[in-house]
Length: 129
Image (tube, rainbow, N blue to C red):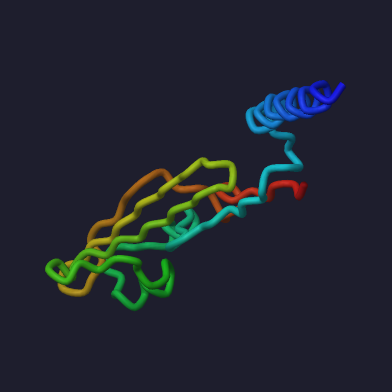
């Protein structure tokens, strides 16, 4: 009988290890930590780009699009706007847009496909668990 008690304890501990492994592999949704969506940079929409016109001044472009994220010190005639989203579920989305000036007047702009109006398309609200 003395040997039976340690054997039962050891067997119950070993069976608990497999249960821990099963939980680790198939976590319930309430057990995973909440990771918020993180957006960084300049959000540019198609509506904002539609306001751009050739020969706009730098100040006018800054008023429409905001302060650029990147200004190359060696090519100050080009501004880069970058918007990066890291979603809590692990997905990542990066949008790039540029504007180019010639003698402080807007001459060219372009970049990735942009959403229509707001950041809601890129950062939809996720339900709270």
